[in-house]
Image (cartoon, rainbow, N blue to C red):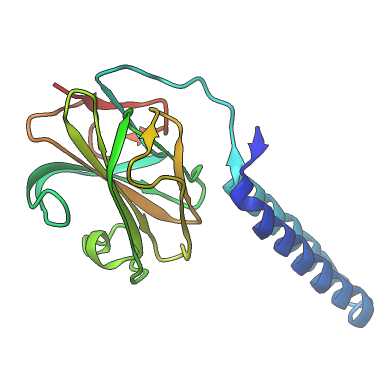
Length: 219
């Protein structure tokens, strides 16, 4: 396992913060044993939490020409037909994956193809499971067209804790299935909008792994 590049700054800042509060305790409160031990334990826990959040575990990815692979780790919270008004402006099959702070937060391309549309939206930081988060939170929208002509839209959505969405794609790029297209810091969600009639292999509340779990199949 390695540490993702998006974590370098956060880890450096957390180390600086830990150093400062430990120095203050040692200098000002050295005679209060319980406080010193509390700060030691807090510092260790904070460092472990930051490290695990930015972990980049080694994986054997699942690939297939007509397969749709889960773009993120997390739990399936939505599988439903819905109206998609930003790009398609018609009915689509929506699948949403909620990423808690303990999940790996790397986002991966669910299919290979060409990026036909990309847009970043600044916005609010509603809880990621709130239905309004899809249209009101900070988010990105990416549409990739499969070589058979089927377009798949996927959307990074910031959560209540997230304050930064990172993306690595732009319109016109050729992307490869399971390669990274972005990263979301702390709790968040990824929505996928598929053509109606797409076969979905997931169930509600199922735990999935980005780049590994097969979400469905394009016809």
